[in-house]
Amino acid sequence: MHIAYWCILIAGVLPVVTVGIAKAGVKNFDNHNPRQWLDRQDGYRRRADAAHRNHFEAFPFFAAGVLVAQQLGAPQDSIDMLAMAFIAARLAYTFLYLSDRATLRSVAWAIGYLSAIALFLLAAFKGI
Image (tube, rainbow, N blue to C red):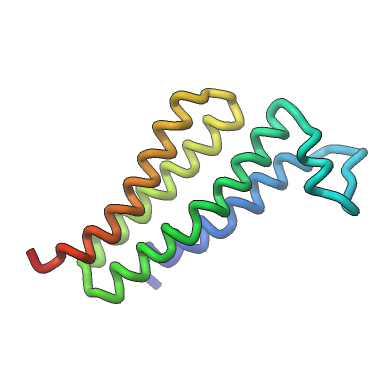
């Protein structure tokens, strides 16, 4: 299996990891109304939930970029490199979000987003 496919899997797991961080070790977690409970949190738990939501938002665009690039025959090594750059950026984004480093977090987000865009451009301009 190509590295880029593993990266799609990792990207799909990141939301679960971050919401797990938000909920971990809490005795008063309300599983009947988890979203309302999460909305009332603050500090790193609130930021972990925000990262969780953002990972879900980023996932479809990234996964589509990988699949489009492969479908249109872009070079696999380039696809794999961009997919790994996306994952590295998203991991950095998560760490920076949890540690409340907003400016650096935004830089990491932008790198991930640009990596996903580059996957589409790689496919579009593969023959040029």
